[in-house]
Length: 318
Image (cartoon, rainbow, N blue to C red):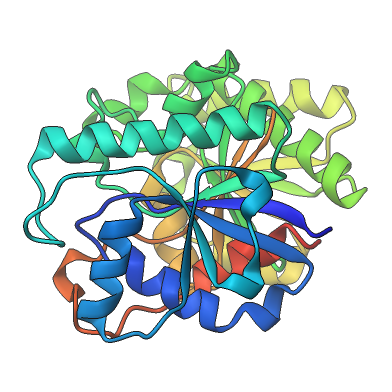
């Protein structure tokens, strides 16, 4: 029997139904994995009709009924709707959390290999700069040891701080946070790929603030790197972020760790586009999401790219 992976349908006001349908059409790329959707059968059916994507679907309420021969299986989470791509905030929020909690339950009970959650609008669902990474860590008792890894087999990146305002970054980085996240990344690569990864760490300031005595580079980042080296972790830095992506081509880094989200995500996406996935490390199960947002500006235009979702599914075959 093929191993099960859940795909949580995520935000209903989004391109998620489109990328799900397009990924399913290319299921020959992940033959060894049996995927099913956690979401509303009626909603997805209606959205597929609006998108004019013919798809055979199968409503289930038991994982034993997942059967790709009957079509794309949907573990039904009902939601009331009038307009299939427009929802009240509270209705949508309840739907998303219910879907997530079922995915967490299945993964925690080892009924599935893990789950992929399609994008959600974090600002509508979470508060105080928290995102799904932090929500899952708190839910599973692993908060403080989680890490966001944007994975590509050529190079991965990880921000120490995630979805917070730029003005809050400097006071949000700490020796403990940097140490824990890099330790988690190193453990993941050793466990998943049986390698000791080469990890580069950027500074926070332009040109590392020339390593002035009161700089974050000298007070916080450099001492942590030296401590990690003593633990046998292959880590270098802090390197100046303006040349970090130039250096990776010559130094063969596996992971580039930055201090804030756009410091590493912007150049990474310029190089790799949608050929990447977002993995939450440090959880007791595997959680992945496509490395893009809800795409509300292109809903119903049938131009959404399913590449990242397909790559997320394929990751479970490795």
